[in-house]
Image (tube, rainbow over all chains, first blue to last red; front, side, top):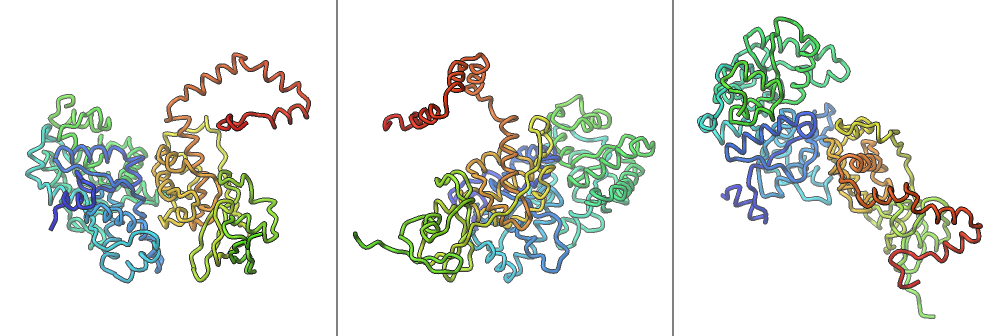
Length: 304
Length: 231
């Protein structure tokens, strides 16, 4: 079996990193999620290599019975990975991960559906059904491993109390869960490896209110407030997320009720931003909230 | 006179023998149709004559510019379709390109399911779906670059199941890109300065004072750039 470097060369192109799917939000509102993840993976010697051509993952599966068309977007991305002679694709956004992984699980195993989609893409390359989807946390755990992550720490997050918020899409439905669906620990393990203290809290896998924010904002604020409250009461200084929509909804809720004393000065950040800070990323490149947080709680002296 | 080679085509289901090697537009005119709309420059630039056709015993709908595509044996032609594609109103200088304004003005972009039908419809071989995807993530430069050859024929939008107005989105992106991220055009600025300084006022006054016949003559005798030798 060829290694990924060899198989890339076989198709006439040398890949220097792992094929990576950013997703639309990471190019727009959630750019800090991407830049921090790229920094971390560079440091770990396993750079993320963005697909040259990619399209929206398709987001949110349709609820209609005949929903095959809604999986086409994901399949097109798999074809791009296949074109590179690769068989793995890393996602960062939890929603993208979920959509891509559910499509892969279905289309890779159902030859008839795969054939239907290939027939539809009649003038393009067929998808052969061999691409697997990984979330960055899985890559960190299984490929890098926690010891190697710990070895790269230059600015330990010791003193920082982190509530890891998984939400829905990393752990449900079960076939695509990156960890235990009820009590996941993979993000906690990552952040403990860089010195932070992980704070268990009851709402770590509750829904943030997701797209309800569009036309039932009150509902998503209420839902997200419960998450904030639960994390703050457990004693966290910061909530770590892996999803631009969770991040947005929690931030909205915090803005709405920000003056409530019981929430203290809790911050909401992407888990990769904390990892990047621990691995030496210039604090000036991280959101202001993180800078304050680390100066306040962790053993960081005014930046790298 | 030598025997002319003929190709059999169908227009609205009726068979016609037309000279081999002529374009769809010429063939329809040869058969007696007259274009009042849906024809323009006849050179593949204006985008007025986007059309669809089918080939014998083939379910595929094919797309072309009628003034560019040659007729083939067994081609089924029809009158040129047109789909209205409303354009969003905006004042370029009032937009904040830091936000994803494309999505605000054309929210249907977010409905793209990546079916790629737009790309298949494009007679200019533009990766239409790719630029719609770039628009979704607010990448003005990419949209501008990928859509550069667009001639606004509208076949993409006619075929889109998500009702996206691709070519209007692309035009807006190119405009935004040109006023924000692209480099300052030095030659244009220099020329504008010359005009403001009145460098061409004398020529302009001369033209304004000319009679209609004088203007027509001046137009007929003009030197076309690149054709100086021939004139």
